[in-house]
Amino acid sequence: MYVVQVFIRVKPDRVDEFESLTRANAASSLEEPGVARFDVLHQTDDRTRFVLVEVYRTPEDPARHKQAEHYKRWQQAAEPLMAEPRSRVVYESIFPPDADWG
Image (tube, helix red, strand yellow):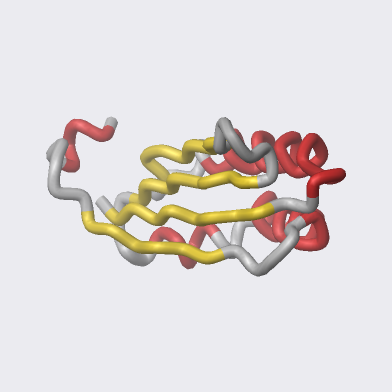
């Protein structure tokens, strides 16, 4: 599996709006055949910080995800809510085995 963690800091007065948009994007992302998991995490001690954990079946699937209409809508609506550009780290899954991701 190909795992991407996206780190996002949102403007303090836009947290609820960002969370709503991102929940909808995550739910739609799970309908993509190349997405095995899409988690939205909220930092407990700082409401403006989020982490997206995106698990893709192949290294090519993130590019396909970025072509999805729901992603393009999310990107256009969510980017103005961010306090700074988002960053990401890419991982290769070691455990559990790919077949166990579902």
